Image (cartoon, rainbow, N blue to C red; front, side, top):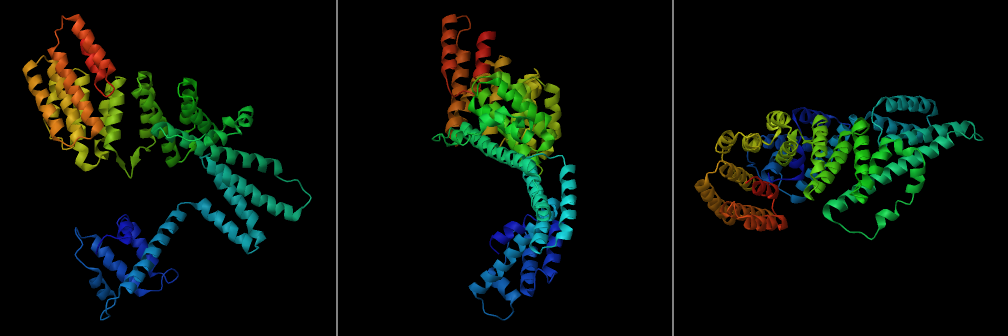
Length: 470
């Protein structure tokens, strides 16, 4: 069978979920068609094979023995199964969200005018709602909705009462400000990272800010963190905004669910990365703290895996602030969280970086020759470490040969624009460095000016350091 939406979804189900889905299909409440069950059985068997070897015509014959193949009928059958799969996923998700489930029950009781049960259910939902630690936008929206339901029950009994109106208005404001600020904050962050322009619509949508700033609602994490997040990207050079944003994020991380906390942490990481890339190295410690928060909260993992790029970036940040023991622990502890194909090369490369930074040059070189780096960019990064090692060990002939080979490697392989220019610049300036007379101050000053003026050169600081040292 060829790849389909059904197989795409089915391939994500674990063993327990497949068993549960089979029970779902066997239930006449959900499914009354035997042909759908047969089709699912065939698909489930096909999923266990490395390569599918059964055509849709063969599947049709197994579902409907002796019947001539009709594409229309087969398409309809697959549509039935797909709808059941999607409904099953929705039910499973609802089972994980008891508060939402009870809210739907409350709506059903209202529609059927079963008043005796509504108040009891509202009380149950409120207790469960307040018991949770999360205090995000959804928390205030649900609290407002529950109060509105209470208000409707009470006003039906006492029409002249002025019940809950003040609290309802405040909760409505909180929910609105929080939702609006979150959207604006994320859009402004996106604009900042990708240099997107707009005609001022975002700022005009924040006409409520003076009123908000004059009140006490900024103390609420669901509002405050996004308010300071917005200021962070609006006034990028005001460090006080970052400290207030970071303070709320770290002090109130438990107020946000994992997906929203991840969103906030990544937003802050991108902010720090941009400042670091612009030359403000004072943000490296802040960046490491954000990575550490993300690791402690398990929000940097996607389906249990850590991106190799995040792995490399965390190590690079830790080395910049000389947290060598922590970096070593991180490299070892998180190797197994990487995609299997990248575990060994990423581990060896980052251990080599650590060994180099701590002065263990021979150990660093040994790490680099223990594996072949199939990833071109990782290969080039490893070659750059070797370049530095040869230079610091004064292996002049080896270094020249290495630079020549590295130059050929960059030109021969399909290295995309920015990276190609960067590594060719590294080779060019490293070659100039070793060919410049260390006693010729004028020549070295000229080289320093050239390096400083180069826009694309990731090893700029290292090259400049060598000119100072030597």
